[in-house]
Length: 406
Image (cartoon, rainbow, N blue to C red; front, side):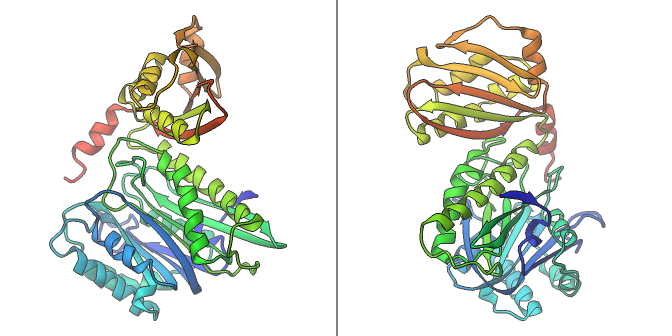
């Protein structure tokens, strides 16, 4: 099992493209993306838990119940949420893409991201479709364009692929995602589109996606906000030729492991590229009595504004971490908690049995200056563990969001 090149085009039978169609201001940045399979796919999706849902999300939540899918089309710049003609425009976008591709409307999923409350000018998408389809390519370049087409305040493209062996066949999974602000557990704000050439049934695909999402995208946070447009969709076309996965077993476990490997790194990259961020914060909670409890504790740490600010300032203020554990809602023995800061620069133990330690402040500062800061929390109460990811809180976060719309 290893990472490979190609993004959403790494899986056999998939092609992708992206272009500028005029939705975003300026004339160069891609704002429209398309992913297609040459044959029908199984599909599964997970969506925002925000009660305020964008029209594309509401439409996709119905569309994903179907049995066959060919494509995903998504735009950036306008979220198509809470706008006067949002659902009408979402359906127009789906219908136009289906007609241009020559497939059923119900086999096309859509996505939008950007400013809320503004009507989406679908005519620009309709006019761009012939060129967008003409640009489709089953190459790394095709995936690259699609990945760029869904970016908003992202500073880095999120695109990855993984391959593994199954039944003597090479199976690949690929993905592109966007997400930089409005990121919080229970569907961290994002668009994420995954492809695989694995032959797998719809129920098992959905089960795998839920299992992996709960351990990756639902364990990241940047700012505590969840978006109206969060969507995680996977398409599987079976082109790898493996024996179809229709139940739990060795093959299903291998698929889940590969999907977990892919989504873990994508989630990490989203957290690291949080708006204005200068540090990725990884919190590992170990020796806990349950995985669920460990997750709750780790989430509390990465969501703590004071912990995030301390990491930004390279201040080894372990008290912020202990405090965040304390208001997590979980019960534990404070006198059994150990805390350590770690990074590529080394490790420094700062708290033992709930009490502060004398530590080298210069080493601690060096540890906290690294791009990724790891907070290791040991509970000494069991065998379970969980990892969550966040980022520091910087001045730039306020600057970015102070004039996001204007």
